[in-house]
Length: 218
Image (cartoon, rainbow, N blue to C red; front, side):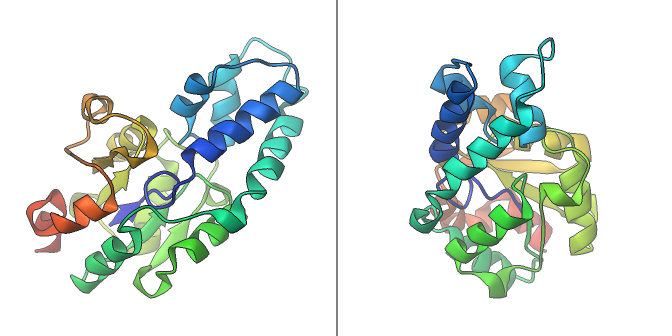
C-alpha cells in the first residue's frame, strides 16, 4: 500500500497554495490561487515551471522555493491529519499490507507529516523527493516506494488526492484510489484514471474490505 501524504493523509494543500501564492507574489508574479491549488501534488522542481512556463528567467526559482518553504513552515505546529488517516494506515497494516508513504515532500517536511499522523508503528517505509531525481507526475517516487516496501507492481496500489498522483501511478504501472479531501473533484480524479474515489481516508477505511485494496490483501 502506497500513500501520498499531502492532501491525502494530512490537511495541507490549501496551506501550500497560500504559501506558493505569497512566494510568487514576493518575486513579482501574480498567479490565481485556483491555478496554484491545481498544481499542488507536484514537487517544487516541476510546480514553478508548470505555473510560470519554461520560457522565462529562472534566476529567482531557488528564492521562490525557499520562500514557499519558509512560509509553509510557519503552519507546521498547527497541521492536522485528515479524518481517519491514522486509522486507515493501521487497518492496512493489520491486514498484513506493507504501508509505504510515497511523498513529493522533502525529507524534512515528511518528518513533520509523520509526527502529525502519529501512526509510525503502521508505516513500513517512506520515500520523499530527496530520494529521486524528479517528482510526481513522473513515476520515480512510486518506483522507489515499491522498492523500499519490497513490493511488486501487480500487488500494490497508490492512494492519492491529485491528478498528479493518478498519473504517476499509471506511469509506474499501478492503479490509484483517489480521495477528494485535497480539493480535487471525484470527476477529475476518475478522468485521470483513478479506479475508485472516496471523500477522505475515513470513508476509504469504512469501505476497506469492499475496495480495490481488498484484492491485494488476499
